[in-house]
Length: 202
Image (cartoon, rainbow, N blue to C red; front, top):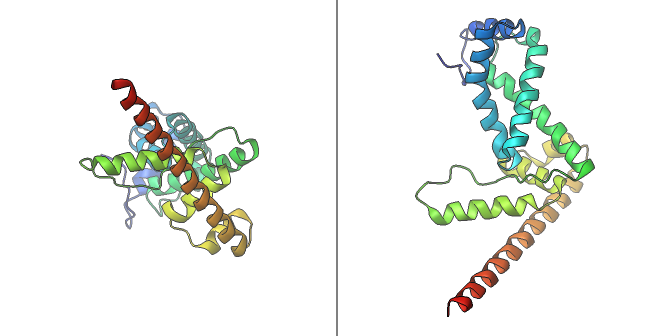
């Protein structure tokens, strides 16, 4: 039986027991936690780190370790996966902060969700956005994903980042402009490459 993703009254007692047993190191409970909750947390993080599997896997591991250490605080008031994703969000915020300081990890964050498999142009556009975001600064990626993926209000973003609403609005404007520039540069580069390829075929 899979772990519940949606919240529901009185149905999470088994998940409290599962987490407690995993914290005690019981192999069956650890395997079920990894098999059932792991993919949900991975899916939550994957799009937020630009499809970078290494970063997503590291954050999943950190999330589950923190969950096991904090197992006594899980009361079953929400689904276990909901609680885990809350922890994952905190870990993601720390990752953003570390990335801003070091400016080394340059994972992109896709703003495009639920792209139809049959829509080839939409898929190409999603990849283009992903690559462009990967070239932005960490803080620009963060505000864009908070605004358009997490659908947070400017006031919420300001509180999260410790900035004023005016500062966040200015930051969003610069981030959007940077994204447009990056996408324009990529389109220009692609056109030039295609033209060169056509010339060589003649």
